[in-house]
Amino acid sequence: MTKEKPKYGFMSNTLFAVSTLWHCDRSILFYIFGNVPVILLLPLCSVYLPKVIVSAIEDSKAPMYMVTGVLFITLSMLILSVLQQFIAARMELHHQKVMSYMKATVSKKAMNVSYEVIDRPSTQVMFKKVFEMIQNGEEEGLQAMPILFATLWGNILGFTVYTGILSTLNPLITVLIIASTFITFFVNKAINKWVFKNRDNWLKLDVKLAYLTYKSGSFDCAKDIRLYHMKQWFGDVFKKFMAKRIKWTVTMQGLYYLGNGVEALFVLLRDGFAYGYLIYLIWKNTISVADFVLYFGIISGFSSWCMEIIKSFSKANKINFNLCDIRSYLELQEDTTSTYENKIRTSTLDETAASCVASNPMPCQIELENVSYCYEGEDTPTLKNINLLIKPGEKIAVVGANGAGKTTFVKLVCGLYTPTTGTVKVNDCNSTAYDKQTYYNLFAPVFQDVRLLPMSIVKNITLCDKDHVDEARLLECLSLSGMDEVVAKLPDGLDTLLVRDINEKAIQLSGGEQQKLMLARALYKNAPIMILDEPTAALDPIAENAMYLKYNELTAHTTSIFISHRLASTRFCDRIILIENGEIVEIGSHEELLALGQKYAKMFEIQAQYYKEQEEEDEHEESIC
Image (cartoon, rainbow, N blue to C red; front, side, top):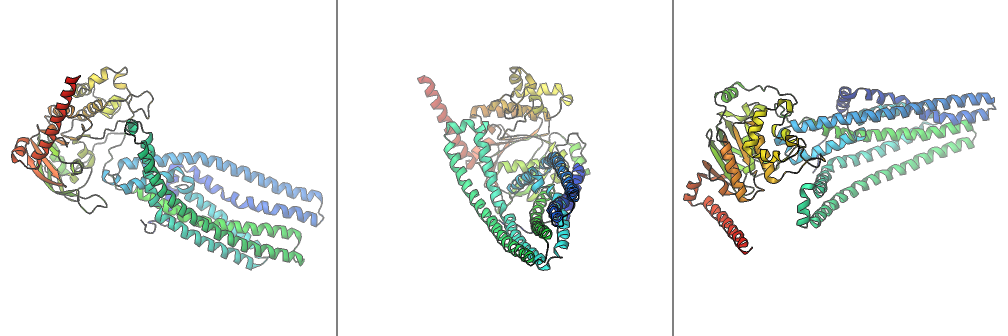
């Protein structure tokens, strides 16, 4: 995969970096640009010190003259060195502050950006890339650009001063040094361009390797890894991706070695000619020994200035690309209103949408008109021309095989995805007419993948501070969901912490207990639309059926959508929609679809036979025991 040229120019990114740092921590800018005089004067003092000593000896100057000159330059170097160390120490502290600010900014962006965008693999790669840049900000992130800019100006000033000194010797030496440096620059620029175009290839591998590393040590996977002997699989897959990653690393390092080889060759030719010329001049008595020492240091220093300028331009190219990535990430599309603000804000609705919610808030009517959805990078739509009207208070089951499009259907209804074509309406209003915050408030979903927060049980249910908890409502939801029995057994009750990875004193809830907690959370939200996307998939059929019946009992006042691949668990629903290959192929009540004798009936018969055989085996084992 290759990339186009950078979206923003060098000056644009420099202004962006400076303005962001000024807003975040302006002190760091003073330290960055305060380092410019040190960059110029410290090497210059180092070059002139030997000349002063040699000149004093050569001209038989008084000892005090030499001592005074040496002390002055040495003291200047000491002051500059101390200043340099002080600036470096202070900048390290401010780097941490900037890094914390940028991490918070990027994390907040990840929470505010539209779910459809953050769900894309390309966005996940971009997030990882940006986070790594922020982690190493002074080298390749936000701070790197002003640091580079200040360093570049210091090098240009040094280059100008040294050019003036060298011009008194022989202009040809100056031209030779500059020419060799520019050749090296263009070689390095070509290498950096290749790295920029191809780095997404190994970043995708890094994401996979990070996933394998995390899962191999995750507590959630520990049982499966051991009981199903998955260690070998993890090792084999890790080696496979690591081999590909190493291949890219070897290629990249080979190019860097090539660039270093070209640089070393021209340094040899350039310095060989310059030093040879100096030796020739002193052999001819054209220059004094003191001047020889000075010019020797100046040529070496001039080469360094040239190389630093070239490296700065080369590095500027890389940093410019990085800042383009950071800015592109920060410009990702966001929901119209953040759902993660600390303060509860009153959402502003379109007038039509406002009247829809006010006229009939609970339960709601949902309508899908010619809805299709195609994922990024896919040619075939996951859902195709879905037309469905869900009446207020109706219980709908959406069933089908894995990959049929059930979860995509839920995400479209919830507003997490925007239809590629067609519209989703709630109470006869297009979902896009609603403010996002208000639209999300219409739904109380319970998803298959339970994600507990590293907080107390009460905060996991209410998702708010204790001061804002409605105690009566909380107790009612605990009782209705059956979570009150779980809480009663815990020493810390509702204040019990969850997620052991974060909290050492946290407990581990069972699958059934987690589902009860999720149900309590959904009930506490008290939304007009309840969605259950296979939340009981980890439970056995009997437990799942009991849980679904419980959901049905508790959601009598809401419009409900049940997603399941176990058909027996959704028989109580008013209508069942069978999705196959992204299309609705059958629709009706459980009895109607059985009477139809088509795909639903066949699927139900197969599942019923399986559960019947399983039940007979269990009864047989119990009789033997």
